[in-house]
Length: 386
Figure 1 (cartoon, one colour):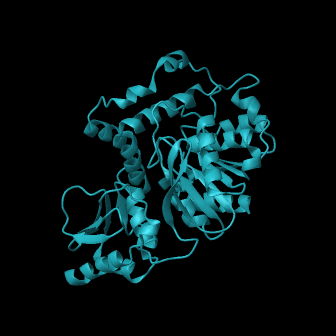
Figure 2: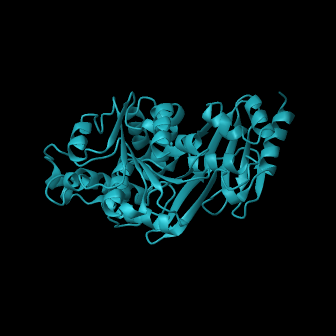
Figure 3: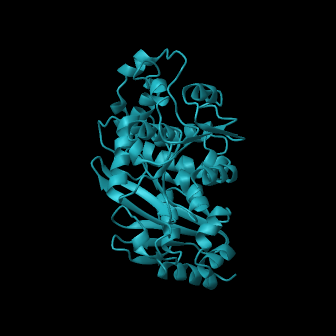
């Protein structure tokens, strides 16, 4: 394929750009459209939605990389960008909010169910969202250190029957990051209720992974009339074993995260070494998303505060987590990962003891079922939510 043909394909994408489904941070955004076997271009997107293609220069905010033939298919087929991304012919790195947002904005798809990025203002600040589909709403809540991007596979899988809305918790991703906020399950739950109110959602179902699962349970325990069914994907649960470091953790102040102790290359190297698959696919994109928030002082402080509160979640007593769980009203599906090292499958027995009417499913995956076992996870979700 000639350079002229590839450039024409990228120009067709730019001409299709719809600013109404792209939620930029303000100012000019630089998205690199990398052609692996041809000439690449940078798409410069202004605050008012104008797009201009220029020669690549400097560090882009987001990177989209594919071969020339894939770029041509994307330009030819209005759904080609998202299809190529799902089939791993197109790689999106650095900032998934902007990279996938560009694909959505250049898809040429219109109508109420199209993929779009936007935000709502709540009492705790701006909350960033991505959604697609029509039908009964499903709110998707990510885990500690994650973002709404971890539910892009869920949006793709369920948008034909549900309006799926994934949000960035305050403190994470592209949402506001208030200093000194509680960043515990009740605080996050109130923030989610603010989103439900602002969007006028009628008892949405809630799906949560890890920390998001703990927040989904908090919603079910404190505001059962505001939510429908709950899907708990390897949810964070109060520790049952002795928390030997609890006194020290209580004394630690998460505001220390406002100071970057280690240089960025050191932090990035440590995180990527901790995750064996961090060089490819969703795992690599997930690491990008984590680092994007963690390397901001406010994001780092929010991460420390949320991690501290997960560890200190009180398990016992009349007001403890496990006693409250026994009173959960909404129907709940718990999905466990057979290889999950963070929330082992063994917790299933304790949940069953506390909540006899919950449903359970164990999958051959780790801690993020919607990414690691998407087919089985989304089949189970569709059945349970139907």
